[in-house]
Picture 1 (cartoon, rainbow, N blue to C red):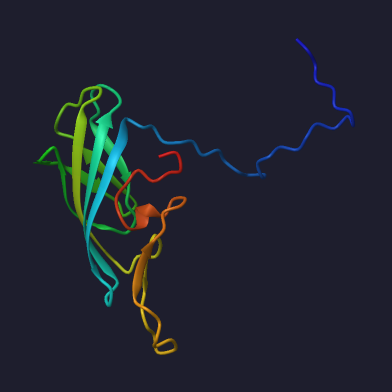
Picture 2: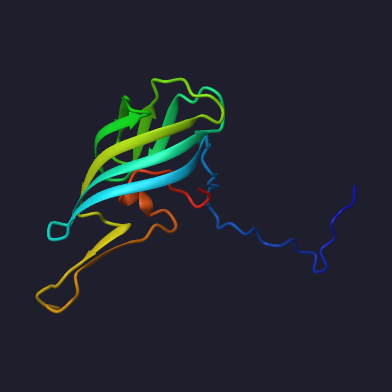
Length: 160
């Protein structure tokens, strides 16, 4: 086995900062094929009532749980292939416990009804203020790199 020789006798410094911990891409039991959002926006109150529809394709046999990123949302209902599904939500992660048995390549239609008020990231409400009374009214979104989780439930990481 060859031994490395450094010209200046000093090995290179590590890329990561001291104390940094590695972050790995989460396990992907399903592949997202399509995301559809149906949103009712109240610009004055800065609220969203939404329906998030995710078409997923199972990548393995027997997927029983889905973990979606969903920060500060109010989850009202979760359905998969038309049936209500039990779920847990801690304010950051929505865990859907599937009551059906999935098979490799099977399509799962996940439908999530949710609400949010005055989101802190991801969706931005622009409107006139006392200091800028002529400011145009607009709503815009931004999801890079992990801001989508603040305005709709999703698998929110750069590789997805």
